[in-house]
Image 1 (cartoon, rainbow, N blue to C red):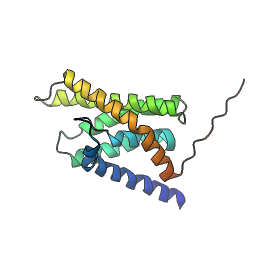
Image 2 (image 1 turned 45 degrees about the horizontal axis):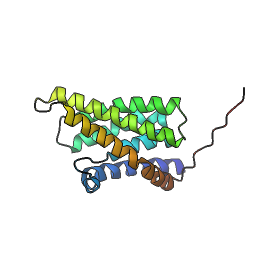
Image 3 (image 1 turned 180 degrees about the horizontal axis):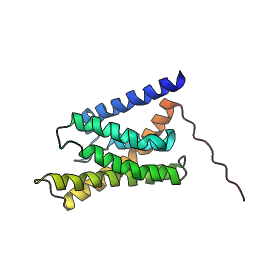
Image 4 (image 1 turned 135 degrees about the horizontal axis):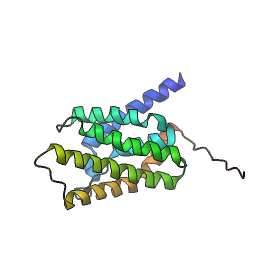
Length: 172
C-alpha cells in the first residue's frame, strides 16, 4: 500500500512540475534564461529514487510535454530520452548519493538534453538556425538549472523523506 502511494505521489509531483514549468517558471527567469524543472525532476529521480526507470519517465514526461506544447511533435520526447540514457549511465556508474555527482550529473544531463533538442529542432525547422546565441542560451539554461538543483534536491528529499544510504567501502 505504501509503495503504491509513493508511486502516485511521484506521478502527481511530475504532473505538478510540468504545470509549473509551463506557467510559473518564467518568474524565475534571468533575462531569457529559465531553469528546466523537468530536467531537475528526472535527475532527482535517477540519483535518489531509482535510476532503472529514468528512461521510461523521460519518455512519459517528454510525451506529456509534447502534447501540451505547440511545437514539432516528438522533439521533446526524443531529446529527453537521449539525455536520460546519459543520466542512466552516470547514475549507474558513479556514487548516486554524492552531492558532487548530483551537480555534475545534472549539468551533463541538462547540456546533452538541450543540445539534442537544439540539433533536432534545427534539422526539422527551416527557421531555426543553430548559432552562437542558441549555444550560449543552452549553456545558460544548463548552468542556471545546475545552480538551483541543490535547493530542489533538498525539497525533494524532504517531500519523499529520503535518507541517502552511506556507501561502505571495502579494503580488499
